[in-house]
Length: 319
Image (cartoon, rainbow, N blue to C red):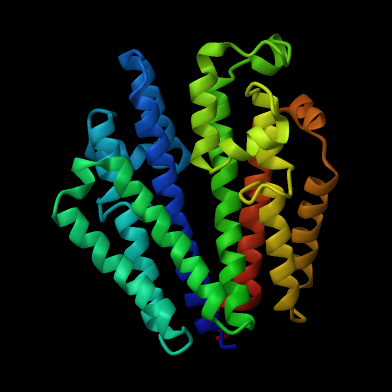
């Protein structure tokens, strides 16, 4: 496959996944914002959304106040924000258009229709009328796009690059979400409270984090007890059966990377495989003893390094 074609497929999938992840973060913050809280707590929650995407500086150049209206507008429709849902869907469509001949008709039409319908809904004010329904629609269109890709695309390198991109982006987002939300909610939890003493007042906030990655029902099936931060961390980091966990994401990255491997990609494969092995044999108590923030920061660095390796090995056109 031409590296330019692989590059467009890779970024088409990353942007579609990023749009979904942004919708998930905004939805959980919007839902949490409906709970009784002080103005300072509300501002902290919306600041966390910007922190996850490392957009605080860019946001403050355009807005004086961090609140629900400003942050949601910035993260949904602001074309100057590369992580905004509007920007992600536009970039996904543009990358899809560039490789139209490689995609099935069904996948192209799904991607194109998502972009067109999104802009129609914005123009009609549907976002302002019901933000939660709007975010659910974005998530559904991303699910549809992945399903159409798996159900209609030839099982060849094109699909493998798309899958690598999807799970790299998902791993990055899950790690960022965990890092920011645990820092905001847990504080010194792991050093000062026993694992059975999580305050009940935080139940809705921890459940909101689980819902943001479609993990609330899964948590109940796996652990069957009150929501505890250490168990939330274990589920979203180490559980391979949890679709959006770091372990599950790296399993898919390694599997698809193996299918497209070439003579230049051995080092990237080694790094991805080592990271997957660390997750496979890791223990949550060891991770928490070391420090969750330090662990997730290192994980993000390694994921970014693997992404750079994939770009170098496969996606950058030879000069």
